[in-house]
Image (cartoon, rainbow, N blue to C red; front, side, top):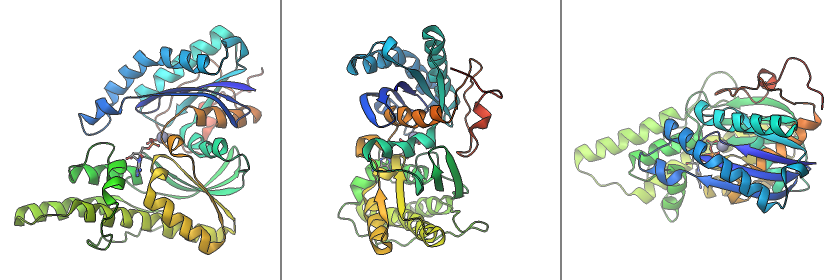
Length: 347
Ligand code: KG4
Ligand code: ZN
């Protein structure tokens, strides 16, 4: 089954053709990062406008690169939630138009489910069940993936996402957007013990975490240093801060492995590209005798290959949308019923 997939949830306009959930025939990404860099973060209004301009060309390129015409495509998939609403609407409406005019099934895909599916594309042997840590600019969750479309939330951040905490701290340190990526580069060779940060704890689920306090600590540290005229070593600060963020994630994954006895761990989302997180997670999984998977670097960030992969499993589960499909800015990974029609759509 060949699926043409579209992604526009944030600042990448992307389209891909994926066969049977695992084979990527084409994968096109038009990034807006250089423009958002001017503002130190994503400007939602600009993101929507750039998606409008790019989407037709990006989809066309994905078809051409896969050597497919629309006739060869069996279904159209699109990221429908969560994300920037104006950005999502561009992809959703384009996909609806395409599905309607070509009379193809329309498959709505949850963005975080697709981040996890980036691993199916990279690792043909990977199958649920497994534990997943999804760490992106907007989300941080610890999940039990029982099956391709069956997710259980073990815990999540109560405030900022890990990527957001990295981006905001990096901005305060004067690093460019996307901050997580630049902090990762700065941290190389830095002393991770040079600055100490609190280890934030929250009430409730032992898997829940909090990053807003860490971010405030770094802002205060920079402010105090500037008031006293002291200099800050950005390499050491990057290494120390990254270490603190990664420590929170590792601690909870350690607990998740202990309490579930699941012997496979999957990393997903933009922050899964982070070298410190990968190294620390590798060490943890080695200690626990658990198999670790993470996506190739080019599939950690937003792309449509991962959407086409997850869409195959959503289609097999009967998750097909009708022409009333709407985008949703927020939606839990275990509750995509809100974007599906109340009655099954037959194809
Ligand atoms: O998954 P993603 O591309 O978009 C969302 O769905 O949010 O994730 C973007 C996040 C940003 O916060 C960015 O700073 C972070 O991923 N990121 C990284 C690295 N590359 C991207 N964070 C840490 N280390 C990296 N190498
Ligand atoms: Zn993402």
